[in-house]
Image: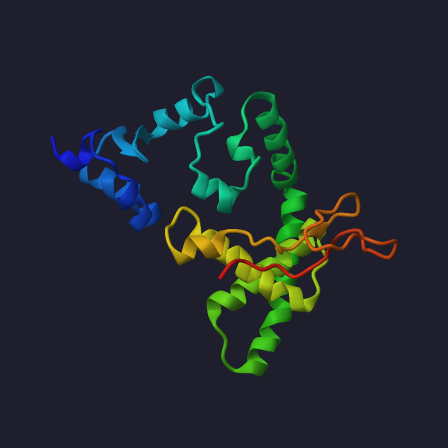
Length: 222
């Protein structure tokens, strides 16, 4: 057996280097429903195919708590996210998300909000003559989704928040500067929903605070 495919061989470094492409590449080299390897020194099993999907979504076979490595929890998902919950806590949080995203009317509002953000951005791009597509599209998606979610962002807050979100997705589960940029800085953005506010910037909502507003621009470690 190829040592790279042996459970004794650790695949952490190839995973970090290749990201999402690592597992599909391994499966192309060694087809089959099960791939055994090691990640962070611990035995790991990758499943794929219709039977694997049915197995994976059976709550009797899954324990999420502690499964995600800390570099992923500290960046992309966050501590306490639905991806690390089990039992009733997971079902309740999942139902909340599905209630927002499975309703066709809510999805129509989301698509409409992002479409309005596109329509507002295109004339500005024409005036500038040249734009960086990744940065420009990230700003459009951030503005559109934030409006749909009920968050009020001032114009000067959209670009910093978009950069923050791009850094989070680009740098999770990596090593080096990209991962450091993905970590939330102590002065990261606080969001007020009208009922509670994370006091990260030393400011709290007042009587004039909108029902949902950003209280400070987001920053990340550089």
